Image (cartoon, rainbow, N blue to C red):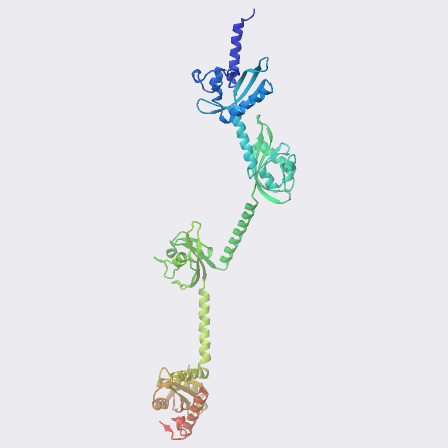
Length: 561
């Protein structure tokens, strides 16, 4: 028995309705003569519309088409009609009631009358928004991959290159035409298919791998790259190939190697500084210890983070010799040599260094120069002793002939400048040779020492008394105002020396003869002045000894004590 036609049509409409709902589609019919139109319930639901929101007219569609799409779609209709074609397809955007734009795939069939005039279009509008968004996302991602500076490469399961972006072309130098379908091992610095197979097997089971390695460019240049490899799966989660992201880190690697070398060198330098016993010390402007090398720790203990003056110098306030603020605030370089309470002396070279946060600290390079200073002091003392010995008579400790001559020259120059006079005494002990011959040189030496002391007590502190050899002494008297005072000086010397000397139970009496010359009266230079005094001394001896004689009186009377 056949199903009634009405019931069969009803079921057919239900199946069409279900199909349209499943595909997010709606029916439309457009009367191309009077622009009246029909829109199915599914079409209205697709746009979130009710019956009262829409009129049975073409404008219910055209007013909802995106302005950028309407002119293009209507042009497609005109072209289809002009060609008398029946089927038409156009993608455009329709506005949903909530304001969102839906991407619509429109398919329709045009009916013509006997004269070829279009009279009706019947078709389906399908919501393809999600599909379109997916396409746009994929397109956007493809553009990003193509334009990114990173090298993005894909290979198939066998390792043959299937895609090659601009970043890869820039990095490796190959154009897509040159490289696609080539094996990826072409880029390996040392081609190794087995290694690639191991990588592919690893990615198949672990899906990703991150590593660093050397690759080569088209010109053969060796570059160091950071590789990120991941699996490329199809919709059934089956491995279709590998996605490779390569970043050139050659410069970073070179800098890293240089930094490692620099750090190694710095450690070597610091070790060398420690080996030769030089201290390195860094403190900030709050006097907090920031760094101490092993030498500093050996000297003062480990005091990192502590206040330097309390931990190192054991003081309650900054060291009196500290130059921290001069260095840090005025950015000066200073050198100083403090001595610690325990007697150690350090040479400190302090300079300013900049910290990471922009503040400044003081760095000191410190040498313990205690031994050096002791050695220097010993050398200085020895030098002074040598100089003393070179200029003094070791027996009497009086200036010797060399120092006497130097002082006599200076005295004459001074007298010339000041227009003053000086006197020169030439003193010779009487009968000293007889004492040496009869009592011995050791007694003679004692007589010389005692005689020197007696003469020294008779003259002023500012006068220069010297032993110029044997039993001969000289005396320089500066700033002479009254020559008559010389008789008093000479008399004191004669009186002192005539007094008996007792040495080892020997009672010895000795006297002296004195010759006196005056600058500039008798001579105007040191050599002649000494000759004049010597001549006057011999005149005193010839006159009976134990007396003095002036050079100006040699032809006149002699004076005696």
